[in-house]
Length: 397
Image 1 (cartoon, rainbow, N blue to C red):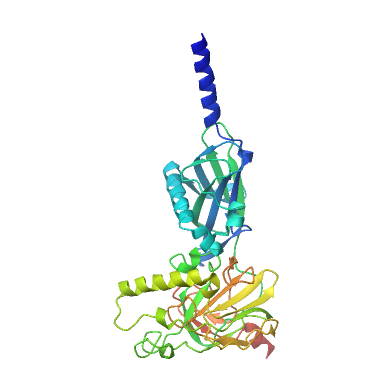
Image 2: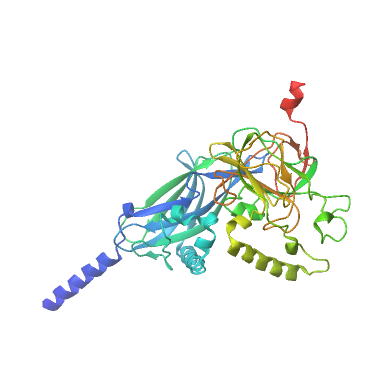
C-alpha cells in the first residue's frame, strides 16, 4: 500500500512539473513595438509585403513552459488572409539561432536591430530549447508575409504543451507611406542601387527597412569613369545633397574620412573583396554604431519623423544643429564615408533622431518619375529615377 501511494504521489508531482504555466504568465513582445509597415510589391495587382523583424516569447511565470507551436496570422477583421505555423523543429532551430546570437554578443552589439530592452523587456535570457525556464525567452526572427490588399494586423498565437490556454498577441499593419510631402534629395537621374525590396539588404535591418542607396551611372554603363579606384572616378561623388522637406537639423557629423579602403580595387576578385569588406565592417561596428552611417545630417520634419542623409563627403556639410532648413536646401555632398563601398547617398526616414537607433518609415517622393514603369508606384531596388518639377510648383506658376 505504501509503495502504491508513493507511486501515485510521484506521478502527480511529475504531471505538475511538465504542465505549462497559465497563458497570462507568457508574454509576446516585438521590435519594432508599435506596428509593422508593409511595402508595395506590385502596384497593378495590389500586392504588398511585410517583415515582422523580431518576436520574443518571454516566460514571466514561476514554472517552466514548453512551446508546442507558434502561428502567425495576417488578419482582415476576423478573417485570416495568410497563415504560417512554426512547428517543433522550426522552434528548435529558432532557439539554437537565438542562443548563438546571444553567445556572440550580437544582441548588445547590434542594439539598433534588436533593442533588447524593448524586445525582451530587459536583459535577454535566451533559451536553447523550446522549454522556457522562468524568465527565459524564445527568439524568432524575420517572419515575411506577402499578401493582396490591406489587412489590418498580424496575430501571433502561442500553443503550449499541457493544458494551458494559448497566448495571443497582435501588432497593427500599417500601409502606404508616411504622411507629408517629400522631395527627392538629389537632382537629375539616379539609380536606386538598393531599396526596400526583399532581395536588398536594407529590408532586413530595422532602422533601414525602407532606406535607399542612390548611385549615378554614366555613359560607361558603370557608376564610375576610369578604373573606379578613386572617389573622383565616380559620377555621383560631390553631388549636392538636398533636404527632402522643411525641418530642423538635429544632428551633424562631418569629420570622418571617405572609406576609400572599402572600395573594390582594380583586378581584385569578388571573393577576396567580400572577405576584406566583412573585416572592415567588423572594425566599424567595433568602433561604434555612429560610424556606420559615416558623415551624416539628420533633419526633424514632424513628431517621430526624421530624415537621415548618410555617407557624406568629409567637410561638405553646410548646416549646423539647430538650423531651420527648407525643402530643396543643400545640406552637404555625396561621399563614401562610414560603411560604404563606393560614393552614394544613403537616405531614409525613421522615427527617432539617430541614424540607427530608430525604426524605418516608408516614404514617397513628389518629384520623381520612374521612366521604365508603366504606372506610378513606389521605388524598387534597381529603378532608374528622374527628378521632375513637383506638380504643386507647376500649378503655382
